[in-house]
Image (cartoon, rainbow, N blue to C red):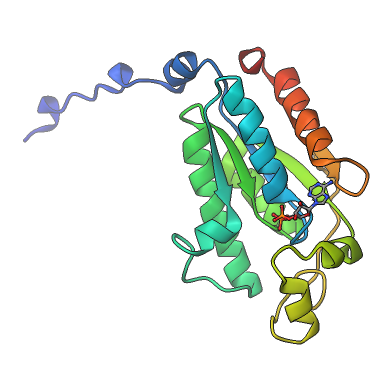
Amino acid sequence: MTAENIHPEFHRFLKREDKEQLLGQRGVVLWMYGLSGSGKSTIANAVERRLFEEGRFTVILDGDNLRSGLNGNLGFSDEDRRENVRRNAEVAKLFARQGVITLVSVITPRRALRDLAREVVGEDFVEVHVKASFETCARRDPKGLYAKAQRGEVTQFTGKDSGFEEPEKAEVVLDTEARSVEESAARLMEFLRSRSPLNT
Ligand code: ADP
């Protein structure tokens, strides 16, 4: 086949705008990060339900769930956490570019990891810090991990033997010691509305 017989027809492919028009919303990645037990999954779930009731199409990319599939071969070393974030960011980007409101819930303990996610996703990226102190998270301990870490049964545990760097440039901070789940969900809804007329 010669080059003159190849006719690229990119102009015929459906564009992001076409999908966004169909869905009546704008694609975005809400990158929710914070200590284990800070409330990422709980708030993502509450926001998703609110959006669903308003007829919005969403996807939750939960760090723990992805670790049981796509990221099943990764551990918690610095290198593996980086690869974990990179893959989650690449998947989130694919969804956002199809017009999906994408809620990512991953600890993402270091600034460099957040920056990597931002770099991968690009302009759709919104940094949402789900904030609670180590002591509060340890008291909540919804998955029993803090107790295990205390007994030395979990290594490289974030906040204990693996660090969490406080953010400098979170677009949204949800302080779950000061706000209820519903208040945090409402704050994120408000943020989405202010960001795009298509998300009203
Ligand atoms: P993460 O996904 O960050 O690991 P989870 O959402 O799984 O955390 O767990 C957070 C736990 O804290 C849940 O059991 C939730 O009910 C509880 N919790 C208590 N108060 C709040 C609050 N104000 N916001 C979010 N979660 C809260």
